[in-house]
Image 1 (cartoon, rainbow, N blue to C red):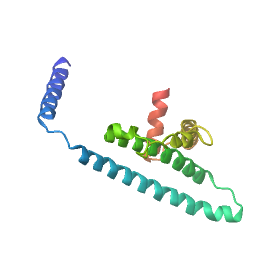
Image 2: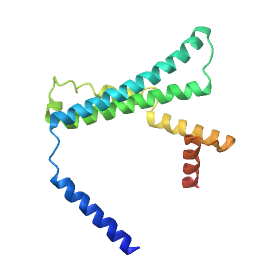
Image 3: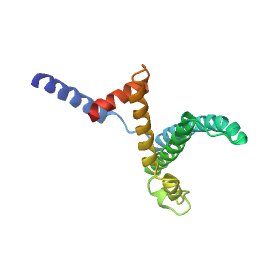
Image 4: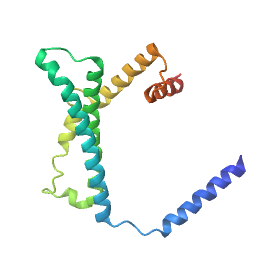
Length: 160
């Protein structure tokens, strides 16, 4: 066991040496990469939110109540949109540095995202309720071979 740990430590040392020889990535390129990451994240969130809207609109016109799957999808869209937005803004602030502190930099309105996080209840509490509901459904239905089922089983074992 000690030999395996020593070999792993040597491999880590080799990686550190290689990293030290790599030149840093220019800040403009990092900002571009962060911006592309944000754009892709927002596009995915918009597609998912639009699919929720498409499913919800006919129900609202008819005065019908959304089923549990649609309610879960809407809650997921809310939590992910807010959390992804907060994360993206934080990443961008880290890259632009002290400019983010300037009054006209566009970052002064970020508290709005924190308000969204707590609107209609704390997003973390909503996420916990969604996880609880999915675990209850898993307990009733049992494993079905999906990734969600596998994750529920792993979580159940970890909590036991």
